[in-house]
Image 1 (tube, rainbow, N blue to C red):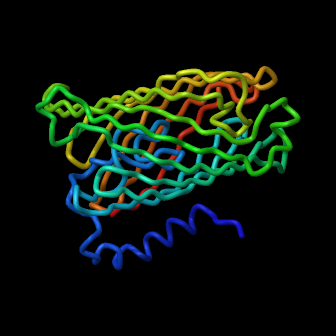
Image 2: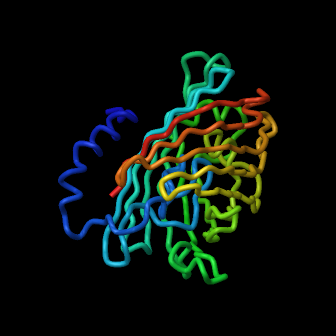
Image 3: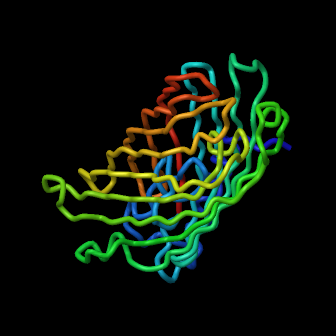
Length: 285
């Protein structure tokens, strides 16, 4: 059975009233304290996991989120990503996402598919409530990626179809640091050998790649920022370049966020200038 992005979102919306009524579930954290849903399922920005825990649960609550994202580049590549995450007591996060990447005019009618499972643990710090302290919130995480069909990656010379990527993230909220507006920063360092995020397999030796995010918050329910994600470029037959985005995230109400972004994915499978705008919907508790 194929699970589509809209099915996940519809299910989350349908369950929202029942979940929100459970006393053990979240709802006490500040808006935006978990970021939005990263394309691989973790709490963060669109491109990168941040050192934040999914959902709105406080230290004695469970939080959760579900999301759907669609990206369509100018060469006809289409990425549909959907998933969900659970945050346990603002300390541990479990996440899952499913990708379908349509190859457009490059290989008409064909697509790449990948599953991502994530685990994140907050080691120390609090990015929001310790904002007057210099120490950031630090998490360590893992993302386990598995391709569901290696036919095309194998033809391109991919070495393996699955791998685990460990990372470390540090996040900090700086009160009034951007002309009176709050400023949020995040640095993630990932150990990876993924080609095109893993869609073209995992190749070569591991590299440490940085992922950066900076956002200003004009209001409590609005964030405007940029992200940058380095990629290792380990598959000679399908060169790639780094990725970046410019995003606006808006929380119209506590349990829903909408992110609009301009995305530059650089070179994909030898096709340069792969840019797109996209919208991502998230529901959270």
